Length: 106
Image (tube, rainbow, N blue to C red):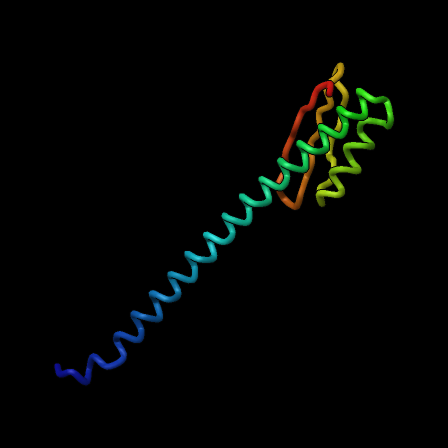
């Protein structure tokens, strides 16, 4: 066996390493995107619940309508909204992420 038989071996190994690193980067990007969507959904749920609670305390608007308006401004959709006593409980969906929040009297 001589050195000519090993020609190109490093190129194949390098190509395999680059492919593995690319797969790892894609996984990390997808996980990061899921975390970002989760945080955005939680923020949308929190602000929607606060808007609903404010509507309950001021009687200015229907609480669930106020929550839906604020959620839509955060690119989220209200999946469920209910008033429990003085609290407003809201569940929103933003893409594939879901979040729930509760806000009481303000």
